[in-house]
Image 1 (cartoon, helix red, strand yellow):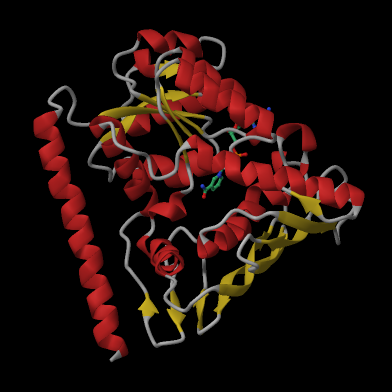
Image 2 (cartoon, rainbow, N blue to C red):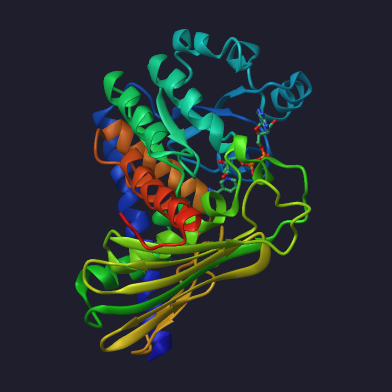
Amino acid sequence: MKMERRDFLSKAALASAATLFSANSLLAATYPAKEKLGVALVGLGYYSTDLLAPALQLTQKCYLAGIVTGTPSKAETWKKKYNIPEKNIYNYQNFDQIANNPDIDVVYVVLPPSMHREFVVRAAKAGKHVFCEKPMAPSVADCEAMIKACTDNKVKLAIGYRCQHDPNIQAYMQVAKEKKFGKVKLINSAAGYFDGRSDHWKQKKALGGGVMGDMGVYALQGARLATGEEPISVLAQASTTRPEIYKEVEETMMFQLEFPSGARAACQSSYGINMNFLQVNYEKGWLKMEPQSAYNGNKGSMSDGTQINFVLSNQQAKQMDEDCIALMSKTNLIVPGEEGLRDIRVVEAIYKSVKTGKVVKI
Ligand code: NAD
């Protein structure tokens, strides 16, 4: 029985992929201007190098057209490796000239969080659509300015919440929508890994570091997406087991959320502990995901025996393709800027709760 369900779910995944790509062919017919959108990556650190650039070799609706980097040696390496024309290579100073480059349709900001606002606003002013990595920015004011800049310049803003493009995550979002097991009672959501570094932006407040924005948003998304609701209050506590490293920002954040329906969530994130799971207890059943926010292999099960185990060839490629389809077809993005802002609103309340030691209304 379980096998049959899994088989059904896998077939459903294939069917949805087929729909996606047949929609692509239709779109190509409707929007003959460009078969593939040109993406410029801004910031060539770990995520761009190890995940996004390789994914851009697999995408069907976009390709790696340009780069923006402050390091000339990286520009040379990337130019050779990905065959990027010199005219599509920018640094942080001459970046605004990208406005005159028709090869670039989308600017993907993959910098430390404190730099997201500046580069999203500059990209929007250059008339380019923008993809921005999570956390969207350190403050609600930043997020609002980024959304406004994109609206004012008539460009779209997508946040890099790759998991929302993953059918395994969409499966539990659907359970929330259908209320398959009744109301949510209690959630336990965790996302963390051991970070051995001591001098990285993740440990620096001015650069938008701290585990809450980095891994905490995955724990938060688990709770928000599993309820389909926005939290109304939070009680949070920050801690560290390595005070010599985590001087400016928290190593671990634990936070309890209350939702309008009465559902509650206990969430944890840490740079000191490897953990990644979501457990949802409903009135009439349960759902577990482990891992819940990995690049691949997110999977889970439900109390009625349903297995969640879609196989994805590349999560980031799917994310960027789906975002580009939305841009080309002028349809809604799966994760627009407003969704990034929703998380940062909660993150601000979490820091306020840490400071005051009290429950903070959101
Ligand atoms: P990283 O430190 O590896 O790379 C950051 C890049 O920014 C580097 O190329 C660095 O040279 C550049 N940079 C420019 N100015 C800088 C400054 N003042 N200080 C530090 N670096 C500076 O970081 P990363 O892991 O690639 O993360 C970049 C962004 O991507 C962050 O927003 C992060 O949260 C996000 N990210 C998302 C995922 C995901 O799964 N969606 C995974 C990893 C990282």
